[in-house]
Length: 135
Image 1 (cartoon, rainbow, N blue to C red):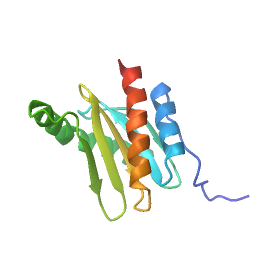
Image 2 (cartoon, helix red, strand yellow):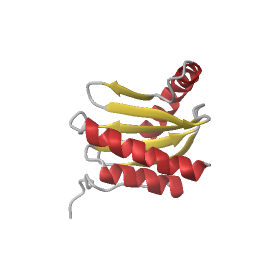
Image 3 (cartoon, rainbow, N blue to C red):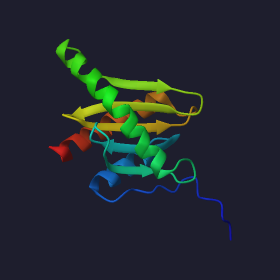
């Protein structure tokens, strides 16, 4: 019996949002975690691959990126640019973030080997589904 965590197992959180976030991870190769947060500091739900990242790391990522992204979102709307999708690349991971509606923020964490084209397509499509559920 192996004690190594299954790389493909996804913890889908506790709500319908967690199920959708889990679907996003399932369809996006190279994804580690996704979080829906309120843009202030609170996690609404999270999905993650425990073999790659912890729940707390995904939740903290959503909280930390939320406040500056909410401020940026206000500026992009004021200047007629719509809701920006922000991509932040680091040595170990890539963050894709967007304010969906009001202060509700979707963030996905990817490995550097993820296909950005596919990740962006999946992220936008799932963002639309989550937005429908939020409204």
